[in-house]
Amino acid sequence: MSALRVEAVAGLPEVRPGDDLAGLLLDAGLRAGDRDVLCVAHKVVSKAEGRVVDLAAVTAGDRARAIAAAHGKDPRQVQVVLDEAASIVRERPGVLICRTRHGFVCANAGVDASNAGGPTRLVLLPLDPDASARRLRAGLRERTGSAPAVVITDSFGRAWRRGQCETAIGVAGLTLVDDWLGRVDADGRELQATAIAIADEAAAAADLVRAKDSREPAVVVRGLERHVTAGDGPGAVALVRAAEEDLFA
Amino acid sequence: MSALRVEAVAGLPEVRPGDDLAGLLLDAGLRAGDRDVLCVAHKVVSKAEGRVVDLAAVTAGDRARAIAAAHGKDPRQVQVVLDEAASIVRERPGVLICRTRHGFVCANAGVDASNAGGPTRLVLLPLDPDASARRLRAGLRERTGSAPAVVITDSFGRAWRRGQCETAIGVAGLTLVDDWLGRVDADGRELQATAIAIADEAAAAADLVRAKDSREPAVVVRGLERHVTAGDGPGAVALVRAAEEDLFA
Image: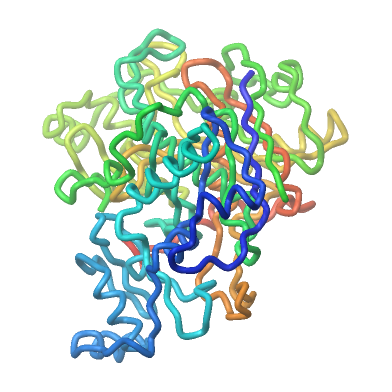
């Protein structure tokens, strides 16, 4: 019988550009060993990396103004979304579904006004969330001698279903997908299409203990050691399906 | 600091039509109180409800034969998928993305050949997974005096991302979506679009402790009591987005 334990780390102070996130997390009481998985909501990572924009510094272009007028949005906010998006996948009133430059498909290219640290500020996704995960893992190894797997997460909406699930956008040291192709089921029949999205399920599990309005971005998941790897691996970008092989979209 | 504990229930014997699932789970050592969430992979529910088809008893029609020829599949298996599907959303080699009669969008309308109890057998989704969840909850209440929330799950692929996440297809007694509209963030700014898919995240967390080739369909999640409700609620069908309001698809 296997078990998982998921625990939120105590809240952090407001994170500022240049802050040392590994140090802040350790100061907050983070205890994570080599077999554990540390899930961190991207917002604190983005803030530490200075990925925050103030609307006062943004000038909207023609395209942003046109889209904003059609959807009742602030043209400067739309400009920030366009700057972050590789392409717009769908336009709906109040929301632009975008493919980000990393390849993720999400609302407003991950640009978020809540918990941004001020009423005119927007938090962007990290430039390279996989690199952020690797840096945080290395920083923890350096300070503590232990290197838990690190998953950086954001809440993404889903096609066809209500609500958002927390999703892995940066990964270091955790299996992305546990692919059962070639293994057999309890009848001895080969499993054809079982590929469990471990990193995304870990992100979802972590979200269940986190209160979004508190400052608890970090969660430790214990019991996933069979999926933790010594190397950092290819990162969450490897979860992106190329448009031409997409089964659903 | 909040925490979650996720524990697999010991394996069940092979489940047969008419089996009493609550009794089997209790015999296997299930201990779940009113504040816990019991997640059950749908396959054992389907088997207990007789939702199993033997290919030997299936005759493929013209449409099934045409699709099977185009995609290199068994025409009888395609016939079973068509019988379960309200519509075909996408056709890809080897897989049909369907909207089921419940409204869920998933590969092959949820029809699954693995762990089906025999090489020519297919397991279907329960006819009404929400009713199945309510029955199981009532059965546990009757036998033990305690009624944990019940979530019946299946692994669904996702648009734009590799791998499958375990997803709620039947729910009794658990918040489906924790909607933060109207609440404020740490800056006092109103949260606009935070709606956490609790039941789906619980299904994902449960999947992380379950080995798919073992017979461990049942998992207890402890620590979600703030989302467990006395009433059964509207069920997982309320998670389905109507086609016309879909943001992504």
